[in-house]
Amino acid sequence: MSYKVKLKKGSKGKNVKTLKTYLNILVQPSPNLKVNQTFDQPTHEAVIKFETQEGFDKADGIVDAKTWAAMGKRLGHTVWLIDELTHIPGWILNLATRGPIIDGPLDINREVFFSMYMEEYGALNVTQLWGLEKLLDFIDRDPEIKDVRWAAYMLATVKHECADTWQPIEEFGKGAGRPYGAAVTVTGSDGKSYTNTYYGRGYVQLTWKDNYSKMSNNLSLGDELLIRPQGALEAETAYKIMSYGMRNGSFTGKKLSDFITGTTADYKNARKIINGLDQWERIKGYAEKLEAMLKASLENK
Image (cartoon, rainbow, N blue to C red; front, side):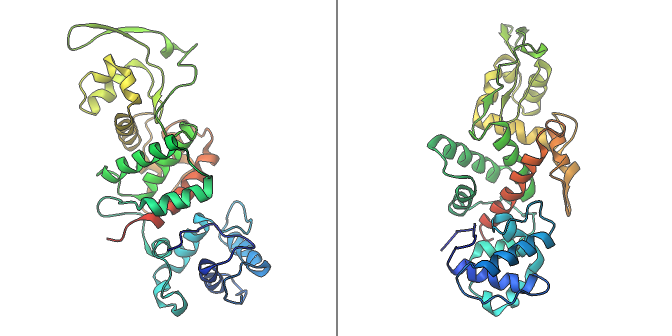
């Protein structure tokens, strides 16, 4: 099965034929494209019209996961009634018919997801691949993540905050020149003294002694993060910090459900969960594409 999502002028194959069938239905007035396997100039122009019609920030005539998702959203379940699409790939059907809420684990098909991700963003090295695989595992097992859009925004946040490493990282500069960058001596529940610096660590930057202590308690870790803050760099713990914090407003008082709920997915203001509106456009773009990739990758239930 082909998972080639990104199509542009010159592309060929069955997915181009499917695309042209969609465009003939969705673009008004219909471009009446000849339904074959060649992405020609009229198809390019029809894609631009569709993107413009859908209010895309950039109408470039290139079809990616976001474009497929927009088409699926418009078609909805009527896709089943279109004879030409009887045998379309499952990942396209997912984009056309799946809602954002999943009853149970997301269960992400790795072959589909990684194929789409690397086509969009380029090849991953071994470390990046391992890191992103681990994050998908954590999301799959997280009973609190049932909304594909929450998962997409979490991944978009990590992609940005961790500079595409897909690994928990230390804050650049390790808090130098900042109040939380000064060493602090604390007493653990074992009665011993520990001198630590509570600069940012993790998939999202957990800072300040009190925040390490509160998060440690919230995750039922006792005083583990207080006496050993480097634990926030361990992948599983870093994920728990991010998931709990983004769902409960631990970082800024804002949480995922404030911006992503029901039919609303406010990927712009969701940035306030972590850091005001800093770099919101970049992260919103990531989230939109990752949402489509995740939805396309969901296993059938």
